[in-house]
Amino acid sequence: MAKPTPADMRTSLEDARFFYEKLNLIIRGPEQGQDLELVRRYFRAYLHCWKCVPHFVREVKGLSMKRQAWSEWTERWARSLNPSDSNVFECLRKTRDHDTHQGMIEVNGEIAAGLFPIVMFQPGKGSGPRRELISCCDRGLFVADHMIREFPNVT
Image 1 (tube, helix red, strand yellow):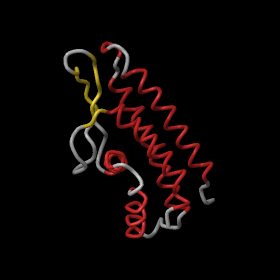
Image 2 (cartoon, rainbow, N blue to C red):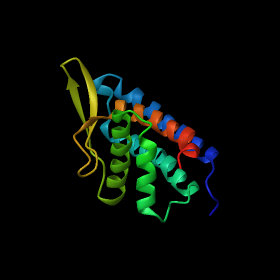
Image 3 (cartoon, rainbow, N blue to C red):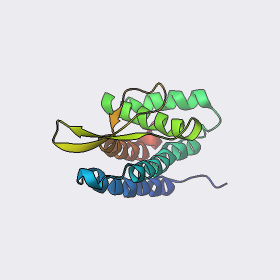
Image 4 (cartoon, helix red, strand yellow):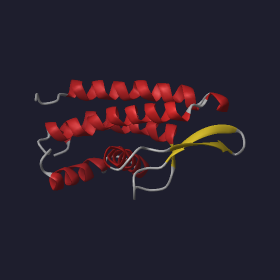
């Protein structure tokens, strides 16, 4: 298989943005228009595209078969993020791993402060409390873009 390139990373990020926009339209719309099954499907697609970015970085860095080295590299890279963005990175990564290895992601609709509908998801086992889906995905796009820009500079 050919080695991934930064262009491949950007394509995956653009695909994740596409699914984020689909999610945003449904989630920010009226409650009666929230199809949680469709939200779950778009979220899984978003996660797949999003997770390709760190996967491609791992391949380019030659760390695909070196689990410990990859963990150490991501820790060094994450130091350039603020703590909440670092948490988003870990949350999305673990959620995708959970979805792949342990079962389907669950999403639930809620009414925030009795005013507007939101969608929550439960990250993968042991990866933290429930989170608001759309805000986590929004920061995830920023984090993936940051990884694409900064991975060559982190040794």
